[in-house]
Length: 554
Ligand code: F6P
Image (cartoon, protein in one colour):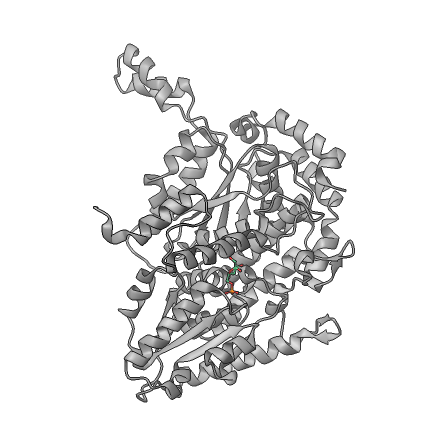
């Protein structure tokens, strides 16, 4: 039954009115074991969700919403690639969803449409290992006979953000003497900045595109080809410097990629869920296959946890319940991702695509408009830097913004007392968000600091921190291949569970098509000599600005 048709929806709304102003300070005072009651250890990750506007009844009601959504059946469809209520999970593209198969043991079997897809996954993984083994043995040479040492991945969206977040997160595990860059944007600056850093003789370009039709990627690949030709590479040697990952073999071959250098993608892997496939080649190139396998292993452990653990001890389910609770019932609009780990600086970027391209939907699986808010705006950044930038709004703004703090117990770098300070700051932020500072406390503080009572009364309201601002704290043992794999898989499943409760398709992305279509019309207008078009006056005015750039007086 649709969420908003179910009695549970009204019960959750009523419960929200009851609990939303109950001070979390009182929740902790009334239950000395609240931390114990609202925290759980999963694979590589400990979740403290005690600093949330919830009690046991909240979780019970959300569990009822999950039962109403037949969550267990939806999870089974996710791991089997099968149907739910007679339709594939990605029913609007008529595709199964099976990115979890990519991190299953290679000797397992998974039948889809009469084929054991694990055979294809195994072949692809072996092809990756074989090719990268040759590179790491110095057997893959550039056009002047020097061994390849640099990989430039040309791709955008899921063909870029996933590999990037992992290679940045796991830099301490990088192979000596190898480097990896990402060319994503059609902004020439991206192209120019990368070419400044690389030597054409030792660089391999990896064209990453499931469709092999993404404008930014193809335009960049075209210009890279020209750049290579200008650097003495002849036409017959171009293919020595290109490999590709795609589901569109014919287009890759037409571009000039050797068929032997094309790695497969399957339609049951969505772009934003694809770093576990050959799209993860940059990861394996930089960190080695052993570490890529460890990343997959960590994700598989989280898969097993998600599949086999009761909802009240299940990390992705708990985080999804909280996400639905705040976005649909407590009026939040965004969700902050705050990694207190410099190596996870690109994690919010990856989650933006993972969450917002999956749950940024306004119709349900039947195409009917939702009557409630679905996916949040995902934003964030590393701590402690955020404390000196946007945490002011988190503490004293007018909005409810649930936050996820993510921090490893151990750092890769033993510098002075840095990690202890980082850890103390991370905990202090979630504590301040929860307990705040009352008017009385602010006034007393001012008076005890010697402020006159007149000034203290003027200043105190400006120093009040409302508190009651919810957060989760996720503790990793250390930022390792396994814990990063588990962390990304955790959020993939959180996003999926939210989509299940919201009754939306998390695996299509029709919203990006219009912009792509319009931009090709506008490009043609920019190319043409006409100055009269049939666009709105804003678009026409702006087009003419560009076309008459030489006449502009800046
Ligand atoms: O943004 C739309 C999108 O299709 C993403 O879902 C995808 O990750 C990205 O563009 C790149 O697509 P492709 O891998 O087909 O080039």
